[in-house]
Length: 385
Image (tube, rainbow, N blue to C red; front, side, top):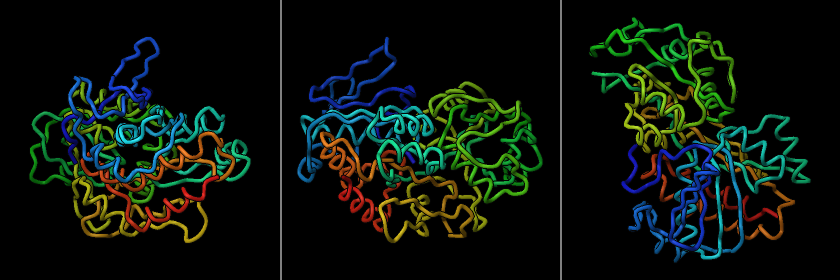
């Protein structure tokens, strides 16, 4: 899954992605934030390339003015950056920003009422849901907004085509498989020449929806070999290194031969890392592409009624050609009790993301939402109050 030239990947985590009417890209070094203009120009002053043009967006986008702040998932950060840029180009007077701080931190900020929506790659835990509901004065809901694959990104001299099974991944990320020429890795790669290089496994050290998805995958497919459970934070063994946010784990692997991590696909691509094929429920070692992610989502479902659209997905499904570590990323919003001054912009931006904005997915390393899900998402957005 490759990204187009000119797309903004590999930004420093925690940066603010914002739109303003002017065509400028300002680096605010003291604050450690990045303001991203949504005017269709890149940092060099040229026209930014991307899968969705401002002209095509402007002809079909319902606009609103005002300011809107979001924060959370780093998994969705790169596609949100594209949506902010294109929506802002079509809708002057809309000022949007999104800060990639990790799913857990975004959910906490939403519960504290410091942002208008939170991005998360996993549904809220009961205590998080309670805080969000209290903030809203009613139910906070999950709206699926994008989908993509979690890459097993690695750097290993001399190896460009790597295959890994769930059981092998469990051993690598629990620190029990220590060398790249271990018998388990050789069994997954019978025709490869594997070096005896030591393995440096890198995990997310912050509260991460990507960790939640990755651990749910291993819990579903590698039990009883996987013993760490599932969640946004795990008790990792000391031999597995931690790094903060998607940029951090990508940089850690880029700087160490023999290293491997789990990360949203666009970060692996922008970091120039290898991406392993993963064994799926059909017994196939499957590459991560938009098509294989879409194939994995064929069996996904959302509730038939209500606006809390938590996606049900079987990581161990036996669909041929499906990439198994597939994630749905949500925006978390108040179903009712939204700031009246911001409601029109919230609904306009989220509607854009779920409709016109889906055209950006494939070029940025994501997969468009299945139409069956997207239709329910737009109906749920329309019902926000």
